[in-house]
Amino acid sequence: MKKHRFIVLFCVAALLLQACGSSVLVTQEATNTVSAGKNAISEVNKFHNSIFDTQNQLAASLLARNSSCNFGTSIVIHKNIARAGRQKKEQGLCLSDAELKQWQSADPKEKSLLGQKIDLMPMERSSLTSSMDILDAFAVYLDAINKHTASPTTPIASTLKGVAEELAALQGNVKILPDAVSSKVSQSTALSDFIGYLEKLIHNSNDAKEIAKIVGTEGEKQEQNLSVIATDADSFYTTYIASMNATLTTSLGDYYNRNKGSKEFESVDKRESFLLALFKQQQLNSKIKASTSTAGKAIRLFVSAHRKLRDSITGKYSEEQKAVIREENIKELKEGLLQVANAARLAM
Image 1 (tube, rainbow, N blue to C red):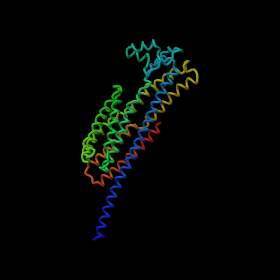
Image 2: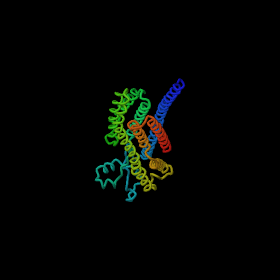
Image 3: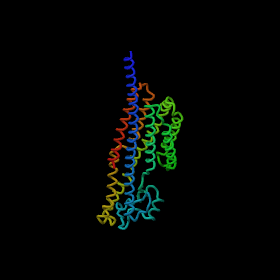
Image 4: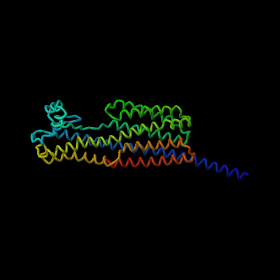
C-alpha cells in the first residue's frame, strides 16, 4: 500500500515538474523573443537610416557642386535646353531666380517645358520611426501575454503600464506629423485602440479568465491595426523607389546625358562627382527593389505570432496542446525575426 502511494506521489511530482519546466521554458523563450524583436527592429532602423543618409548625401552633393541651385528640399532643373539647341554655356543645373518666377506662373504645359521640379528629400523618416516604435511596444506586450498564458500567476500589470505610457508618448509624436503623411491616420488609430485595450488588461490583470476573454475578443482588432501599419511601411518602399527613380536618378541622369559636353561637366572631377552621387543612389534603389519590405515583414511576423497565441487561448485545446502551440509560435517568431535582421543588414 505504501509502495503504491509512493508511486502515485512520484508520478504527480513528475507531472508537476514537467508542467513547471514547460512554463519556465516558455518564459525564457519569450524573453529571447523580445531580444530578437529588438535586434530586428534595430537593424531595420539602421537600414532606414542608411536610406535617408544616402538621400541626404545626394541632395548635399547636388547643391554643393551646382551654384545655380538654392538651398532647399526641392529644386527645379532645366529640362529642354539641349534639345531645343539653346543651351547657354554658363547656365547651370537649376533655373535662375527670374526663370523660376516664370516657371511658377506658367500654365502646366509651358511649365513642363521650362523645367522639372525635383524633391531632394521625397521621404520623411518620422512616420517610419514611429511605426517601429509601435512594434517595439507591441513586442513587449506580446512577451507579457505569452508569459501570463504559460503561467497565469505571472504579474503583468507593471509591464503593460509601461507599454501604455510609451504608446501615449508616441501618440503625441504622431499627432504632430504633417497631415500629408499617409500613415498618420493608421498610426493614430492603432495607438488609440491599443492604449484602450491595454487599460482593460491592466484593470483585469489579476483575473486570468478575464485576460483571456479580452485577448480573445479584442486582440484581433490590434492585429488589424498593425496590418494596416505594415501596408503603410510597404508603400514607403515602393513610393521611395518610384520617387527616387523618377525625380532623381532618371531626371538627373537624363540631364547629364544632354549636357555632358557643356562647361558644367568639362573636367573628369566634375563628371565623376555628379555621377558618383547618382550611382550610389541607384545602387540603393536596386537593393530596396530586390528585397521585401523589412519593416512590413517584421510587423507581420508579430501579427501572425499574436494571432496564433490568441487562437491557443480561445481554441478548444488541452493544456499540453496549448503549450506546444506557444513553443512553436515563439520558435517561428524568433526565426522570422532573425531573417528580417539579416535581410536589413544585407540591404545596407
